[in-house]
Length: 341
Image 1 (cartoon, rainbow, N blue to C red):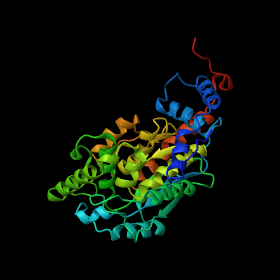
Image 2 (cartoon, helix red, strand yellow):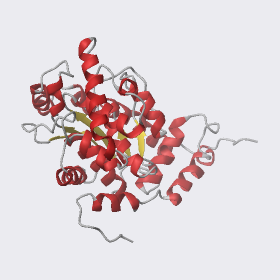
Image 3 (cartoon, rainbow, N blue to C red):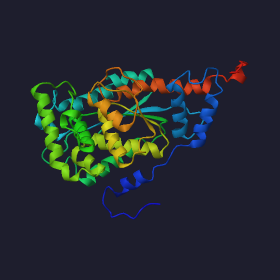
Image 4 (cartoon, rainbow, N blue to C red):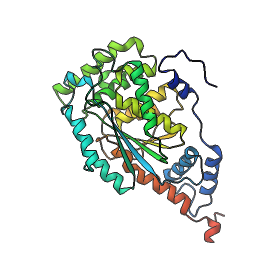
């Protein structure tokens, strides 16, 4: 039952977070039952077995199928870049979006390899968010509208969703979100991002510390953390993850920035990411710490730190393999193989 709202922009988002649908337990049980009959020792395929069950539970069908995987990449720009926190100029965000469109980026090749669709969403690149060291990144109405935009972006029938981003300065934003959500020190959450070190890294740590201190009175509300310390692509990713839950689409989260967006939902409702898996553990130092906070074990650990849904697109291959093994292997009875005595 929907609670009466006060008319504030975040009310609808809060109601969606409170009313999240759960897994399809009947489909999950069917997956477990079939897994026990397949021609292999129990547990012999390790996590591939639990992935098949997870897919069935969150697609709401057995056997689970992956026929239309989609990588959604959200791009935004950030006012905090004015604090000298990045190694690249802000124009690179738009240039990389053009590269995605031309098919020249890493994610394009990975999507091609695993027959995955790719959609790229530009979020007002000409208008960076507010500098979080000086004030909020977004007003509440704009943040709520951007979350809603992310929700609409995943419409169209995908059966597995890869969440990724592009945005110069957004590892600073991810660090600020994590520091605001989980405490500790700014240095706990700040890493090199696109390669900053020395004085630039010190500026990045200082910017995150000052931003969190400025907004400290408002950090008890995860949605306020998003609007004050976040950015458009992070808000849109949170919306896409939320919409996927309601549309029965399992989600693969990419790296540090995507998981920071997801962390806002997790803080609002600890069950909000049950339909998500961490595709990989990024080389960004704080990503492993964040995954522990989220209770997610990554599928891959290859030292990647590119963003743009590259790790998630790569993990599609593993998830597809899990689904195909589960659906295509013969049972002991079908193969005429004697089961365990």
